[in-house]
Length: 225
Ligand code: HEM
Image 1 (cartoon, rainbow, N blue to C red):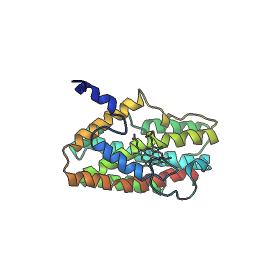
Image 2 (image 1 turned 90 degrees about the horizontal axis):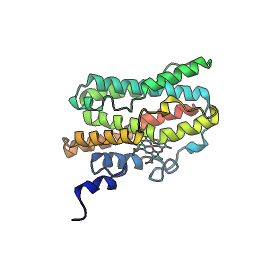
Image 3 (image 1 turned 90 degrees about the vertical axis):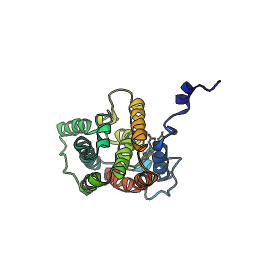
Image 4 (image 1 turned 120 degrees about the vertical axis):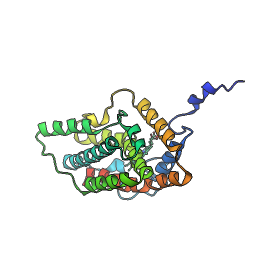
């Protein structure tokens, strides 16, 4: 026997976990535009993101609204209206604490930190309500919001920093430990949780991806607002 069971992990990378996350990722990748990812299938609307002209004011709005959303997601996981939410506490992917440090830094530089705007406020209200009665849909938002930030979010952060922050790397883009391992741990948890879902429940989760793109897209666009 040449293909021992122990050989499996080598075939599994972020594009192939052998579980439900593969489906979540595949639906998400198709919702990208072609300028955003080679795997994207949507036409580009407006300016392709590498041509964005960010401002500090816009970027601050984006960071403030992002912090609100990450705070809300973490609060929902702590409250755990459904027991499976507790699985996703303390994954090491949390962003609110690091964002607080970044906002402090901007304040020390003399910038005024704005109040959250409707993109972040609306999304927070939406996920909070959803989390109370639709765990599959809520977990879709958890996955997309956290994973998007480690992928496209990081590329955008680098570009913005080069354009308007003299290349300063914010805490928002730093993780304690090995990010790919943290992500892999969460993928495995997602796969385990979804094993208990019916096909209908899985589909409900996948169908929610589009909403997550709409809300997160609006927050991203604050960068150029
Ligand atoms: C993955 C770019 C917006 C969700 C990716 C990848 C790229 C990318 C290049 C592939 C990374 C890789 O596999 O190496 C972008 C850009 C965006 C954007 C440039 C906007 C300008 C979004 C939005 C969402 C999202 C709004 C939804 C909230 C995801 C997810 C993945 C991903 C879930 C999979 C991550 C993983 O497999 O670990 N994105 N993206 N992206 N994106 Fe986006």
